[in-house]
Image (cartoon, rainbow, N blue to C red; front, side, top):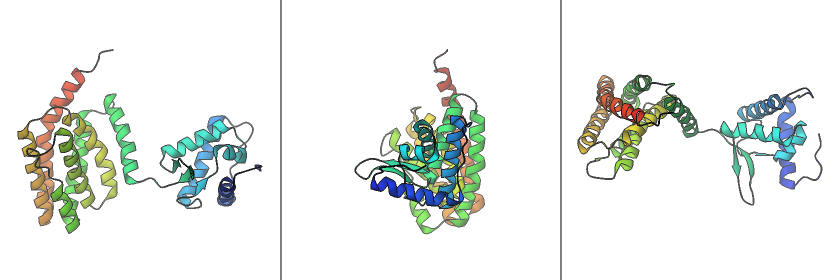
Length: 271
């Protein structure tokens, strides 16, 4: 469907879309429901982005132009765009050169999306504390072993810089950020990006509950000591030692997690 009187930038975006659609033409029939139509549009655009037919940084036509191009309502086009945004495949930019642009989901985006869902499932008690603790151990112990095998000098510098000496600096929030950074750096040193994406949501959901519990200086000292032990084993290239140090660290944390988890649920409002 042609669209009259387009702005120059929108006309260029529409031309780019039409060229990308040459081998991926969407067909919708009058009998399609709105949900079916927006899902088809979103899937078609997703295919174009992932195949590279719509390149990173390419501008998409406006919502109205997309609706006219695909022969659907603006509400249907809007929902398709919303789905792509939720998947991290497009980003809306405001201002004089604003519009909707193709992007690529980052590891941080994927991790944050997973974290939001893990946190929700935990709040609904669809995921138990034991399942979170088990998942963390299954991910982080092998990751520490891999880090000992693959770490670079840069990794060791980052690990050393992520030990907080928490008794002497910062409040609970600062200590939480530094401790989270340590575990992030262990994951990065493992050389497996998927482990990092999987581990951080589990770690963050657990650690946030712990950070709110007002743990004392003795606990913080032990965390720093454990982190140094893990770092030393990784620096030596001692895979067994790094795995054992991480396993012992997580075992030390387990009763603390159980206590704060129980207290948090006891304090929840009863319906």
